Length: 506
Image (cartoon, rainbow, N blue to C red; front, side, top):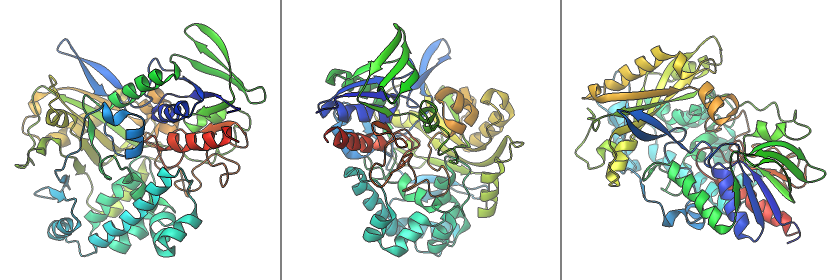
């Protein structure tokens, strides 16, 4: 190989995955990150509780978007234990007497939604068509094939492409569903990351892409000990393979003509010569390090998801618990609105920066219950509550009334609220400050308009060089803002690595 020295900037999941594949291809990889440890947004934090050190997930909490071949080929599957709840998801609306069960089986789900929400649409057709789109996406991931409307139409046909990719979420949901509550439940994915309207073109695509992980067949699960074990272990694997990892190293300058980068490490200033540089960072950081940095600034990055970490001294006693063995680990969703229009209103309200918070819904990830299912005995029970909708105005410490109101709502569904002993609220502003997410957008699921699909790139020639950064021949980007999306997936890192391997073999 003529071009054999690769510099990867950013040791989050995508940087780690890209480094893994590239090192195995026979090149020399150096991976740098300004943080003191690898992991990006997939790391733990330590809380002091009753004099004990207790780890909790600071950023990401669950694993769902990673592809099974990445999980296996990187070596993670052989050293990590995982668990995915088989229990139906439990959904609560304000006026519901009982939880609605979201069954995996489409026929069971059809009956449940008809009974609880008066659904008269075609749930089975919705799931069948969604699976067709997901299979198309997964094959594209495996083949490292950039997305294009022509390939989508060739595989899916014009109707499905219009419904599930280029169309709006509202058009998609109205096509299959009749119930307001069914539509709101499905619409959670659309606005999960940012304040995206249901009428936005391409917003429909968020549904299949967020269910396109294959580690758990489209579902979401947990890693024993905590999801941060995934990035910790991948860092260890990469080091053993020969990747040079330098943390606490801040990139200061990149010279694209002379092919060198300057960064400050604990040992002082270093000049690193490279053949290829890969930015496994957020797009604004990458664009800020090179010329033409004002290009693509029309992309919108604002996020509106907050996270409430909650710790109980005893296992949570859920009022909606069933007799199934994994009921304590089931995913739960608490809505604050009852109509699709109120859902849309609360989603978009935080675009007005005079609004700090507008209750929409909560997604509850029962991490402690999942750990018990994996025989991982921890001193306390923990849950992660992802909350909508926050503006970028304030940090969590400034919004204690919001935290208290959220706990009050949460405690309506718990029999032992007195066992709650510790909480921490993080807002989009906190996520921006901690993880350097532009606009506090934790998942980068939607930027704007068509930038969820074939326009989700930063290349001047995406048809031929999708992951190239602008028009720079040997500079690439694979951070969370690139296709297919953020979250703990590693798919952009894998797809970018395959494009780089082709380039260095020219």
